[in-house]
Every structure is written in C-alpha cells, then in structure tokens.
Image 1 (cartoon, rainbow, N blue to C red):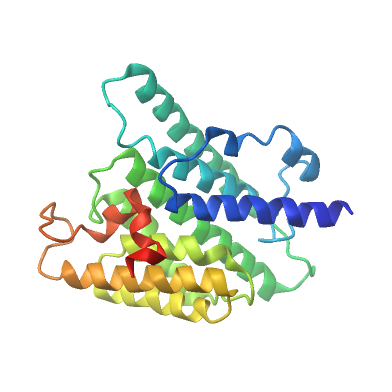
Image 2 (tube, rainbow, N blue to C red; image 1 turned 90 degrees about the vertical axis):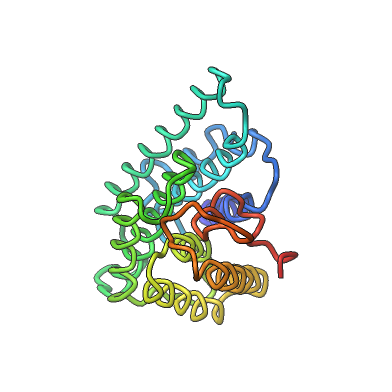
Length: 258
C-alpha cells in the first residue's frame, strides 16, 4: 500500500509541476505538502521513488521555479517582494545542488543493470540542468542564450543527449526539460538535436503529454524561424520574441497558440 501511495503522490506532484508553467497565477499553497512527502519518501528518497526512478524532489524544484514566474512582473522596488524572491531563488539553487549529490546514490529497480543505471542518471542530470537554465532565466530575466551559465548548462545537457538514449515508454518526465533545452539552444544544430529528441519522445507518451510536447515543438519552430534574421544574443525583438524569453511566458507554449 505504501508503494501505491508513493506512485499516487509522485504522479500528483509531477502533474502539478508540469502544468503550472501554463497558469497565469499559482496559489502558494500548492507547495505546502506538510510532512507528507517526508513520510512517504524517507531520507533522500532516491531508492523509493517509483515514477521517475529516484529524486522526486526535482518536481518540487520545478514547481517552485514556475511559482517564481508569477513574481517576475511584480513591482521591483517592493523590498519584501524582492527579498522573498531572492530567498526562493537561492533555496531552489541549493535544492538542485542537493539533487546532484543524491545522484551518486541513485539506483534503478534492477540491481546491476548498467543500462538502467545510465538511463536514470541521464534523465536526472538533464532534468537538473534544465531546471538550472530555467531558474537562471527567472533570476536574470534579461539573460540571453549567450549568457555563459546558460551556455554551460545547455552544452552539458546536449553532451548527454548525444551519447545516451533517454527514451522510456510511458514516462513523461522529460517533456518539460526538453522544452527548456529547445528554448535555450543557440545553434541550429543544437536546436535540431533537441527537437529530434522531442519528436522521438512524443511517440511514446500518453496523449495529453504527447500533445503538449508537439505543441511546444511547433511553437518553438515558428518562433525560431521568425527570429532567423535576429542574432540570438540580441535584444531586438520586432514582431517575435527570442525563444529563450518564452521561458518567462510559458503560456505561449500552450495549445491555444497553435
């Protein structure tokens, strides 16, 4: 029964985290889980997380980053708002540091299965790197794809994508990280690599997640084509925004935009 409850809890948290980018407002209580997760996932939870295979905490960080999106447009001269936002950004960064450390203790269901170990490590590394990209963009809204931190995180994630197959039938956990990487990719070659992976993943997801991934792919291709004549580090926008800026207005990736 505990294992069943863990699956339910993690699926709920995943869905909350992955849908909040498309909400114009988020109730702060969405992140108030009390001690429920500590009870269901004792310790770091790396060996008891059934859905993603460990480190279900990545969803909580994603949720908090998406909650921060609602504060980007708030009055910047409000000291309390600014301080609260800075504290939340620092907490998210520290949580991502902790998750990276936990990767060393991550184990798949089948002990000794090196292929499964490589898959889970790759998925978690990419998820963490994508969260770092999104957090950095939220912390520094004016940052472009030429920002050295964003370039570093993108290059690390793409190095994994080039060497490791991340497809896992039915597991939607990579939908949002791949979308973030597509927004942050600089060269056409990098963008094609990520969107090829998005198309591969689309074919093995449930209908709802598959549709959202296809929507993101279509919108990003359209915006990238519109920005073809604008240098990706430039703040010239004209009729189109830079793809990386979509991370601050994720509603543009929702289905009504098609």
